[in-house]
Length: 137
Image (cartoon, rainbow, N blue to C red; front, side, top):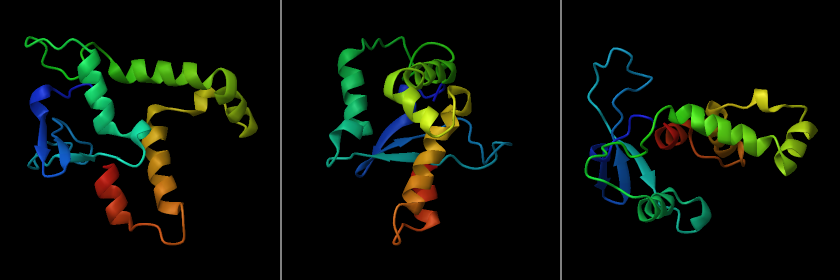
């Protein structure tokens, strides 16, 4: 997320495509770059990434001299700190305690992996692992 630039975004049919400069499954950077696709969620707008990006673009000053989608340094660290602050107080803290966990047990990787686990095991007719991996990256 730290290296996504405006030039890395493109619309492909009904999805927003994002080209990443470096991918975990291509350490030597020998594969051609395929975009990761992000789809709108019209049923639950409160979790729709396209709507969130639109709100971000409307509320954040965008300058032609800024090339990064999210300017600033160390985006992972900033997200981690906000996540820990959120889970360390109120209902988040109570939920972690019920599960025998602390904020030290949660990381940014947990969000993506937790979502894929939920999708894969949410029912007896869960989508195939290939479908989940292609959507979750």
